[in-house]
Length: 172
View 1 (cartoon, one colour):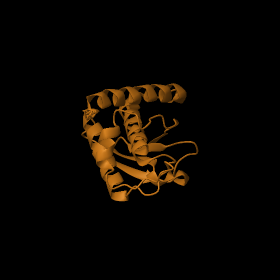
View 2: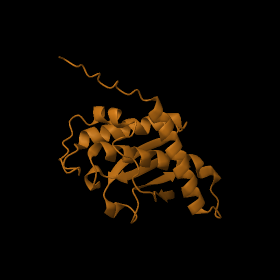
View 3: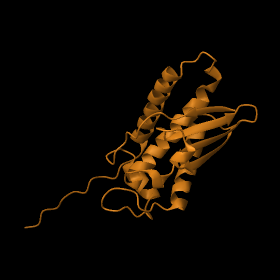
View 4: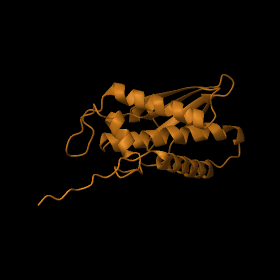
C-alpha cells in the first residue's frame, strides 16, 4: 500500500472565492467571535467532505477508484502535516485522512477550504502515482502536487458564482 503525507500549511482566507459556497455548507455551524472553531457540526463537515471528494474524484477521472475521506486528529497524522493518503493500486481503493475541523485554529469556513485543499492535494498524489519510482524525489513531487492542487482549486473557485454585492440606497 502506498502512502503520502501533506507537507503544506493552510493558505486560504475568508476572502477566497469559495467563501460564499462554504457558507451554504456551514449554515448550522457555530463559530465564536475569536475566530477559532468551537462547534462545526460533524454531520455538515462529513457531508461537505464527501461531496467535495465525489466532485474531485469525477473531475480527476478517478471514477474506477473507491475513495473515502476520514477527519483525523494530529496524533493520527505525521507531525507537521494536514493529511495523507493510503492507496492500494490492485484493489483501486484509497483513504484520505484530513485534519479534523476541531483541530483547526481558524473559523470553520476557512478550515473547510483548507480541508478541501487537502483532499485535492491527496487526489493529485493518487493521479500521479503511476509515475512514481524508487528514485522519485519526494520534495519535487510535493512541490508539483502543491502547484497542481492550487491551480485546480483556483480554476474551480473562479467558476463558483458569487452573490452580487448589495446596492446601497440613499434616502433623503
